[in-house]
Length: 256
Image 1 (cartoon, helix red, strand yellow):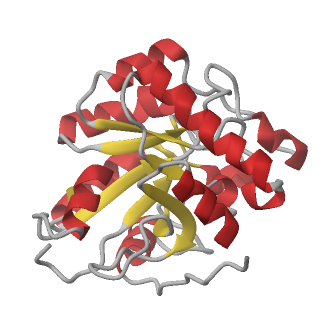
Image 2 (spheres, helix red, strand yellow):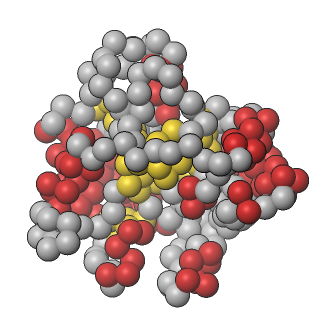
C-alpha cells in the first residue's frame, strides 16, 4: 500500500426515503443524503473499495490514492431498495452485515428502548444482493446481543452460529464481522479470532492506519442523518466532510 493517508470505513444503518422523527437520526440517512455523500466523496477524489481489497492493501497490495470503505449494519430492507441503486450507478462496492437469525424479520432489539422496528432483508433479497459483484455480506451475530455481556460459551455460539448459517446460505466464506452495538473486550476479540473471522469492525471513531492496525478492531466513521441546515451539527455537507476527514480519532482500548 503506497499512500500513508488513513482510510475511512463509513458506518451506515438504514437508508430511508423520507425523514423520520428526530429520535431516529442516528439510525439512518435519507436516500438523497446518501446520493449527495457519494457525489461528495467522488468530487474529493475518493474511490470505494471492498473489505477484501482493504485487507489486501494493508498487507502491501495496491490501493487507489484515496480509498473509502462503505458498511451497513443490521441488513435493512431499504438498503436494497434505496442504497443499492446508488452504488450500482457509481460502480462502488459496499458491505452489509447480517443478523443471521433475524433474516426476513425486523430489528426488534430496538423496541425495548422505545423505537419502532424496521424491516430487515428477506432471504430472496439477500440472494439478489449476493449475486451482485459489488456486495459483500458479513456477519453481525445470530441475534444481535451485546457480546461482552454474554458468557464466553454463549458469545462463542453467537459467533460460530452466525458464520455457519450465513456460509450455508451464501455458499461462500464469510470472513468479515461487525460487533453489535460496538460492544467488545479482549476476550470477545479472541473469540472472534477463534471463530475464523478475518476482520471485525467496531463503532469506535477513527480511520484505518496503513500500518499497525488490528484487523479485528477496525475503527469506523459513523454517518447518520443531518439535515441540510442544522443548528446542532451545522450544514449537513460540511458535517459529513468533517466526520470523514477531520474529526479526531476517538479510539480507546477495551477492558478485558
